[in-house]
Image (cartoon, rainbow, N blue to C red):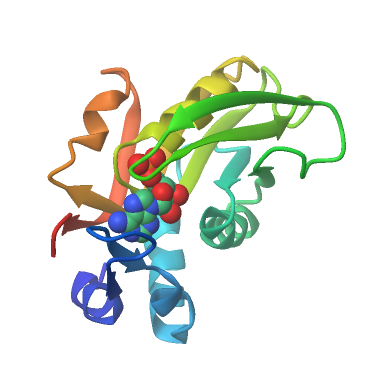
Amino acid sequence: MNKELLLSNLRNIPDFPIPGIQFKDVTSLFKNAECLKELDNSLYELYKDCGITKIVGIESRGFVMAAALAVKLNAGFVPIRKPGKLPAETISESYSKEYGTDTIEIHKDAIDENDVVLIHDDLLATGGTMLAAYNLIKKLNPKKVMINFIIELDGLNGRDIFPADADVKALLNVEVNE
Ligand code: AMP
């Protein structure tokens, strides 16, 4: 993987959405064709032999690479969304994040016990969002659940929030205050 290419194109926005947050803007990677392809190929190399049947993307920045990878892996794509957005029967989970609190939902029939699931989001900060997603998907009893991020923020120990046996991978590590 060409980490230099990705890191050199990742834009940092200081004090967004509130003072003190160094916001890592993955749209600066998505808009660059070379970076987008690099992300897609890197994810494919990581997960091509894992037997994944469903890729779950977390609204909304998680949708982009989750859907692209699902096509490449011949897997299905499943959205996790904010409350009230999904039309059919849902289950939900609440969580706290680096700034504020939130709730997420998934369609109850989106995952079943035959699925091998990869959950994807753009960034790991405290891990609250992904832990809620992980707990939500566990309720649907899939065979296996893996976790992936484009970026892991170092310095927040977000990774430690997950059970010790959870398979957690990130493509890039970035210091939280840089
Ligand atoms: P957390 O639940 O604390 O791990 O927060 C992760 C979610 O919040 C992800 O969906 C990110 O998109 C967003 N997020 C939190 N902190 C940042 C940050 N410093 N830069 C960009 N996105 C962030």
